[in-house]
Image (tube, rainbow, N blue to C red):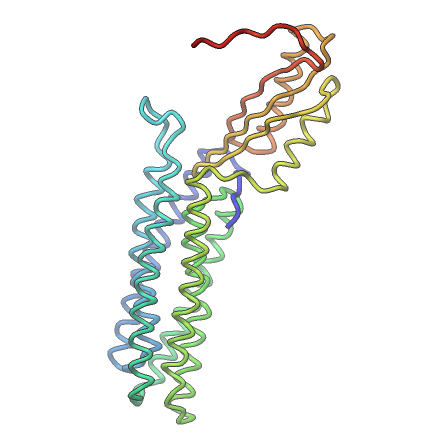
Length: 307
């Protein structure tokens, strides 16, 4: 899950993220309730898998709801770089819930494969799965709009497993059709196993993205190339070195050294640095940019660091 950056101001991003997390909690609770009713009527292991996944989604979305609000609180004396990494911690928390649900589903599906049981009230399950698909599509489309504008890792993680739910609900419909109307008894547990495997893959992607942010992973190569191109486009900038980037929630931090013509005045060097900073911040809204100016070819004495 690559790091993404803001395309809107931080206030707009915060509003969008809060709204997206609230919608996700509401959707997760609604889907859990209707799937619980469908499972009690059908006894389908695929429906049980879908129920458990929706329950996990609801819990994970609630974690997101709380974590995003904490991540958006302003920096303070103890957290000078803000609280953005709460998003990555929420992503890790989600992954543990997701993996636990996958393990339970695998156990139930393998048990049911060994001792197949008929599926009842398949029509109820099919209708509920269809409703779940419509609700999930609406939520995922909204989440993707928010992600495109905020680059939120927590909402990306939420959207990832809700997107997986689309396949899961389609699999439930397939399992119920094959089990009830085609008489293929092993279809239901096999679909359950496939769903559990898909959940595990989603969990791994969330873990990888969260760890990347917690370990201060660099922005994407495309973003770094864009930063380099912007800086080198200014007259007087000879080269760039020590470009360092990282993200923390919706916050992006960029540091670099500009190699400048040594004949430039201090004022002109400062003006160029300001222009580069403003262009980078325009490309990456809400970013914090730190630039150091180095004269090209300078080999004179440098200050001795304190011991």
